[in-house]
Length: 101
Image 1 (tube, helix red, strand yellow):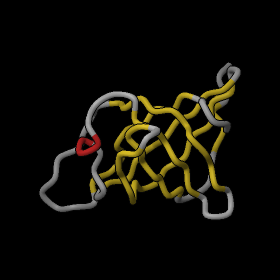
Image 2 (image 1 turned 60 degrees about the vertical axis):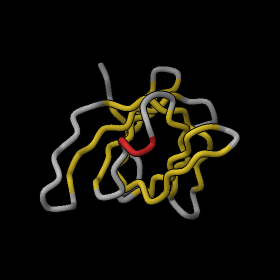
Image 3 (image 1 turned 90 degrees about the vertical axis):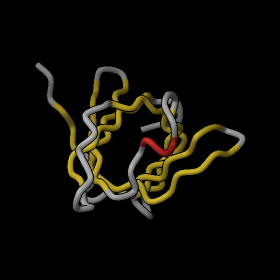
C-alpha cells in the first residue's frame, strides 16, 4: 500500500445501539500507512466527514496493480487539514489479499 492508492470504505457493523447501517461506499485516497501502529490515514474524496461514523466497523479495500487487499477497522479520528478531509482508520486484524481469478 502506497500513497495515492485508491481505497474504498464501506460500513460492516454498527457499534452504537439505535444507529442504522450505511450501505454507501466512500472513495478515499491513501495518504500513509503506519505499520507499527497499524493505522491507515486516508483522504476522503467525496461526501462529508460527518457521514463517516466513529461508532462503526468499516471494511477498507485498497487496490494496486491488479492486487486487492482489505482490512477491517474503526475510524478513530476525522478532521480537515491542508491536504483534505482526513480519516484515521485503526486496523483490527491485519490485511488480507483478495484472490481474483
